Image 1 (cartoon, rainbow, N blue to C red):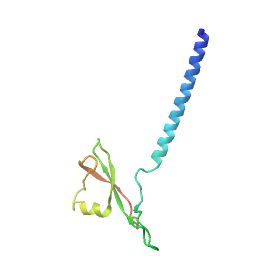
Image 2: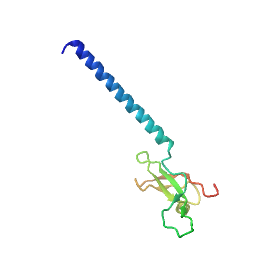
Image 3: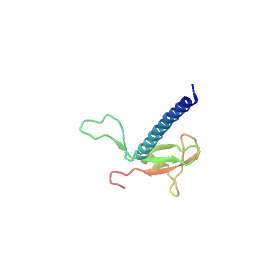
Image 4: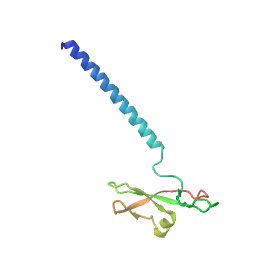
Length: 118
């Protein structure tokens, strides 16, 4: 194989590699954009999949989203609004135990609005 042929093969190989890297980068960007546009935590009340009686609406349970502030954890989980209010102290910011890391480092991230929008 002469020198010109080797250079041509290397140029072709590098060109193919550049195309593969470009496709991978575009795919990663599209995936990141789609993931950032869709909420990871639902913004609406959770609808329980129970078998409602005929002519009755499904049961809706309002949820509070909690986020563990432990930098090694960051776990997100939900708690019913009733449980959240029952476990909250009368004064101060309520802090909860994270079910993943066990630390008292979970705070309410956001609450879903009730049917009156409050």
